Image 1 (spheres, rainbow, N blue to C red):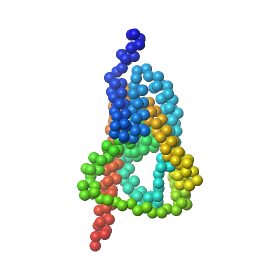
Image 2 (image 1 turned 135 degrees about the vertical axis):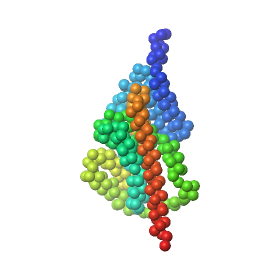
Image 3 (image 1 turned 120 degrees about the vertical axis):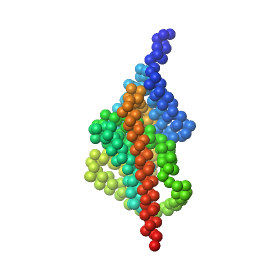
Image 4 (image 1 turned 90 degrees about the vertical axis):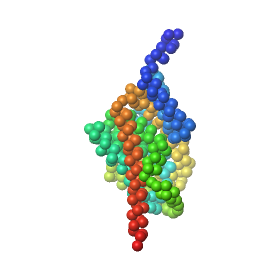
Length: 307
């Protein structure tokens, strides 16, 4: 009997805290329906890896992590599904929209400056700043490419805040806009884009970006390949599979394998908590940058139209 319950005596308060964190993620996934395909496996995985002497930690979860995250395979496969979901039509009809997207990335540069204060190694500071891209696969790829020692914490921060966007963004937007501005209706008029343009866009983007930044070839290539599957018109069933089955399956594996870095020993450290804080700042500044740029653009347009 003593042997049967001996493992219960091995629990530490840190492990119990992380198990509560896992339960919180599951609650948000089920009750609040916040990114359930990501938060639920991440939360359940967090519980699994914080059980004393857990065979899951140094067994299947570690194998999934090594096979899918450490070598960037899961993020790249997920990019195929994301590319198949994206409609670049609005961007092709109104290229000025790129400016709004660029303004919403200001958090990356702001966080880079802040992170460099606490993390002298520029590779670590840059990897942390990329959390502001609001894209988990990109964060993993950059951190691995730079050889950052904080890949785990960066991965957890990126995916956690991606899932918590519905909580993070509304207060920031409300603080920076008036009620009248939030009531503005922006009707969207769908403009036709030729099939040839839609097909050539992912091909040209892949060639140009890869030629300028060869290190980004895999990420941009897989993303644009997914979009090409969507737009070519002869692989509709494959496009649907990439958007639904592939994306959901990889997201589940990604969520549960990310939990490999959510053990109490790795997570409840000053550096990890600091990275989580910097990641939150990156998301907030991203949102603020996009909103303020939009307001600036509207004010400029009104001035030009005023006689």
